[in-house]
Image (tube, rainbow, N blue to C red):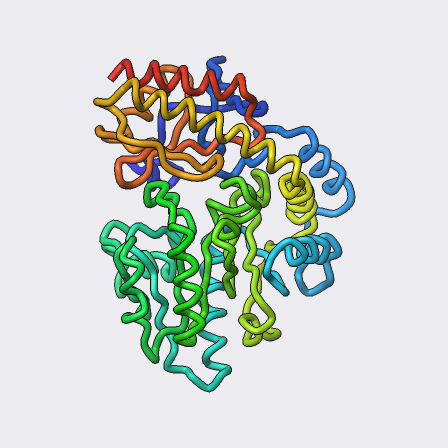
Length: 388
């Protein structure tokens, strides 16, 4: 008999009832060091007192109003995001999937309004993950994502990851945009080289198409800069964010230049919950903390420490690990075994990690994890590897 919760997840036999910082507490009293952070969501850890206070204060005033009205907190968050990024305008969503939907719509509507309705194709790359809606799975194109859900939305061109020099030859008169994650998360913590992002920007400019960055997982300080594309010194026309911006509260956004967003006029898109007062109040607090240069400097120091210890771990277990990948506190352990095996052994050691493609175990801790917790994390992963 089917469970009352639709069984679309292979859930671990764990039930957490309390969180505090980088720790989660099971119903039976066991304590786990959380290196998944809700898959890069709990930016500042569990039950962060500053975020909790903002939530309580806002909840006492106003939870939700429709986007039929002006929402001051939404405008403040949009002002802050545009101040800190390339963008001129923002639309707020509840998730990364919704942000992907709008980014795709925005790119196609842009060319329609430019009297070039034939420009509907969007180039994506193997291993990408942009969500699980109909458009997002079509963007991925992998059999795992689309099998059984046809007919698949047309208009996506899938290219190999890493063959950057060949991208230009695939841009045609039908190409509306190039869509890429600066660091693939689900794809196995694969970092797109800075020179590749610069090349994609050049191709988009020369060939006449838009460039979209998906920073749902790698954005909001996760890689040590506020947004991962900053390492390359280029900017997109459209960017999707979510996960970390809400610190655990459902919040996402699409950021865009004025030109790229020019086709999105009144009535072309909407959201019931997106950008409500509660979500935006929390998002403002998260952004004010993680955009502080001192916070980013400390994050990068801790990321260096974590990576150093992980490199030592890899050297100590050559039969288990191949390499360390990633940027900042978006790290991955490339394994010589199935990543699920290491994740499962981690449960017994009281450490939570997240599997990904390409035999990678993801390490996505809270950005304010302590030095002591980093040492404890590596010790527990070491014990899990030894158990294998």
